[in-house]
Length: 320
Ligand code: G3I
Image (cartoon, rainbow, N blue to C red; front, top):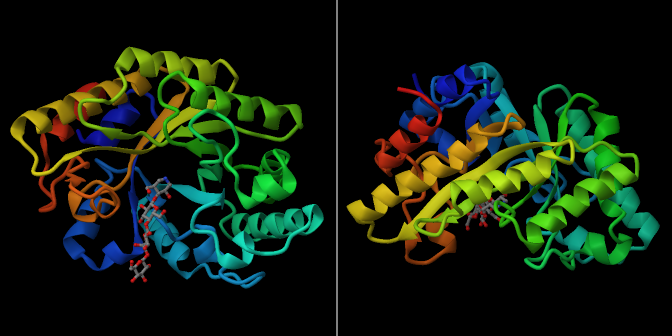
């Protein structure tokens, strides 16, 4: 059995992958993406972000997002919808607007209501807020935090819940995969949203890791337990494990071990409901264009051939 089938056999909801509109003209890629033995869930890499969905105020564009949503539906794959409130890929009219507390709250609510309503019933989960924390666990200095204060978070979650009551609502961030100040900050956000009486269902751990410095399984397990003790689900949402190029067989073996320990941590927590890799092939990974000299972060190589990492993931999923 493949990755998704093996995950489901062990009680998980899905094993899935990010994808992006520009990749969908690659027929070999699309064929493997649609193999539900491996992938039971898709996340659009860019198509549902604010700059894509509301490029100018109150003018909405869902074309690219619809392509991914329709593909997932056609394939019978769950959809994780990503993301509503993020400081990045934010159109200028939001990031540089002259806002008051009231006008920015209204604009944020209008964005969330329109986008979530458009995809109502199609999203297993929404990443309502993304990357709002600094590394020390304090709030990032985004337009939302500066103008509204931390109340933008519960307001965003409450607005999303009203628009699609059945979507699971997540806070999503990176560098919260092992205990520390930033993970504690994310736990503070879970409590904050709940204290306001708004709904939060889960925390997404992005897990953009580096070969050889991936957090240990025990550290990740302890960390997951600290989140689930707050009464929320957790999911690995953007897993990839990069290395310095050119790769060596030793690095590829270590990468497999690092994938295995991460997936095993999720498998060991009943409230870790699913795992998503941030695209499955090195051909379309975001890593090389962001980290010069690094790459090969995915379980399939750029020829769409499985790397040792695939077997590491499958072993952790209990598959054969
Ligand atoms: O669509 C334009 C295209 O028209 C243009 O010709 C081309 C030239 O650069 O750029 C294209 O846009 C790029 C877009 O990806 C689509 O490919 C942007 O430049 C590029 O910045 C953008 O990168 C995305 C990145 O988020 C931006 O922050 C990556 O694809 C996407 O994988 C990445 O995803 C994020 C998650 O949302 C949040 N967590 C981290 C993760 C990795 O950075």
